[in-house]
Length: 428
Image (cartoon, rainbow, N blue to C red; front, side, top):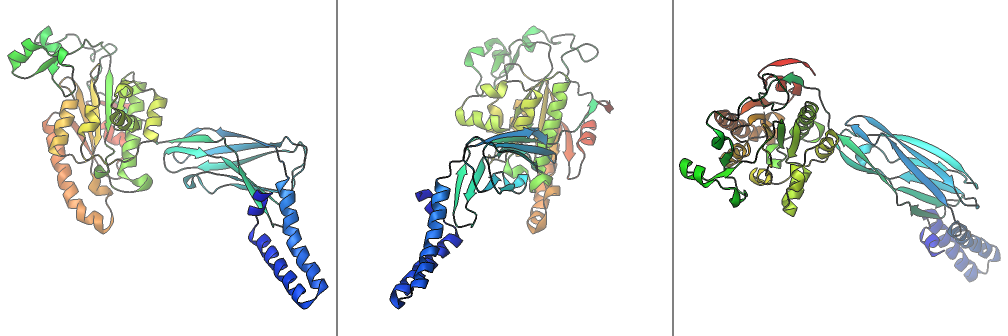
């Protein structure tokens, strides 16, 4: 009853105020008819509150999403199966399903009367032009009296999630010279030309176990060397997605970050399809690994589904340097293909990228020309500085053996990708 009284609408409060005023005036003026009107005006909202407060509606709701994962711009359908399990009827009901604004307007359904064993199924479409993991629900039920004097709301606990993945594009089949699996011209035929010792050691990197230091090679080369664990002949690909705020410009679906995320998802899915053991750095898993100081999850090979989930939940972050994003990665087996999707980099960032990419790996860089995504007066001021920084980054990456493709706003990923290969072919 108290909850129902708290649910008095503006109309209900107006009735109570008018009734009290009329009753006081009637007592002062001695008007019995006016007193009856005043009592009626006060009693009506109270009776409505009593009826609504005693309503014991046992409404059961089952929600289904079809499908529960869609690419950006694709419509999904929500189905609500409603049924009244109680024996008491109810009056006016307002049902509202809570969804984020990016999925559209919140759907509302009005039911005039709910009888015992009442059942109804309602559906509504949702669509998002931005990727992400969105909560659909819970359902909010509002019970009202026929006069609109009292409303009480109840919220169901259950909800579901809709995963909106970035757009994945088919890439042309290109030769990158990094295959270790299979047969033919890409299959390795020898360990190394300089002997077994050179093939099983590499330069020391921060975080390597000191017990793996190979002192004989260290003395001979003059720099700290560690033993490289034996690698099977299997193609391995590691992708780095630069999601730093300083590397991107633009907002919404047309921003440079969204282009980068779509590229990472497309390239990763293509590599997994071609048999590569694939990992992704720079996403939510990497940030979580840094926060919890545990890199176990970073090393786990991704399935296509895991890759799309990771890319769907990428957000810009405030890291100023690449170093913490890459040093968290300690490969048990080093990749044969290192792919970096980056913006303009500082000299320290380039040093970090070179350390991440071992001497045996093919290095491929998609370099974002962020100046082409900049707009407005602020963009005009920054465009020259960004273009200069991008030029320097491109020169340094090429000088260090990276295969670089400079990406400008409006560039088509399959075209950019085909330009990186040693030999291109049909769309796979």
